[in-house]
Image (cartoon, rainbow, N blue to C red; front, side, top):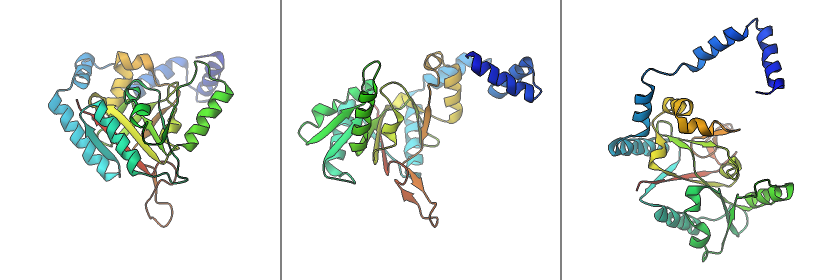
Amino acid sequence: MDNHQHDFIKTIQQALGKSSSSAKVAQSELFGTRPKDFENQLDVYINKSKPDRDTLLDLLIEQAELIHMDVIPVENISLASHAIQELVQNTEPEWGSKKSIIAWQHPLIDQLNLKETLSGNDVEVFSTQTSTKPDSEEREKIRTQLLQSYIGITSADFCVAESATLVQRTRPNQPRAVSLVPSIHVAVIRMDQIIESLKELYFRLKWDPQEKKTGLTNCMTFISGPSKTADIELVMVYGAHGPRQLLLYVITG
């Protein structure tokens, strides 16, 4: 925490009549202290059995159907890649005739080899990968490619089965705009990224040493289904403020 943040928080504490010590107590009450069975609980969350993971996948599929989200289990990364190829062949952009897609630079997404898979489909495949310190020209190029793309492909950190919610932390080369701007959002995850509930998510973020290394990053996005609104005469409309379609490919192998 820098001096400006410290001074700002101190001013608020004084205005509320709170001391630094009482603030620490309040923080402990709000966020909780490490549970006594912390290691056992973490082991239960991380090392789920295959039947438990299959049950979570079934729950995810069931909840996703309620919010107009398609969950497609595939055995391996190659089948996920070919499924995306079929999606591109069977869909059309909302504007124009040129098909362009944009994908995160991400270890799992890179394995899809989309440029090779889609090479004979007259599809332009853009990547969000940039240099270590991208300049304004490079950022503008990504923005232009993003606006041209009708399909955005991402992964996620977790997927909450109870609410069919993708959880994405923003990182370099993984902008959240890829999940927001194109009219079709495709996400690809593995089975071990499916968790049961928000309770499990918050536990993992706070107590899992691996997750704490990453931290919260500058933005964490929760996505439950495609964009939807019923503002006008209570009629549900999809795609009003973001993607009209969300497909989640879960690699089960």
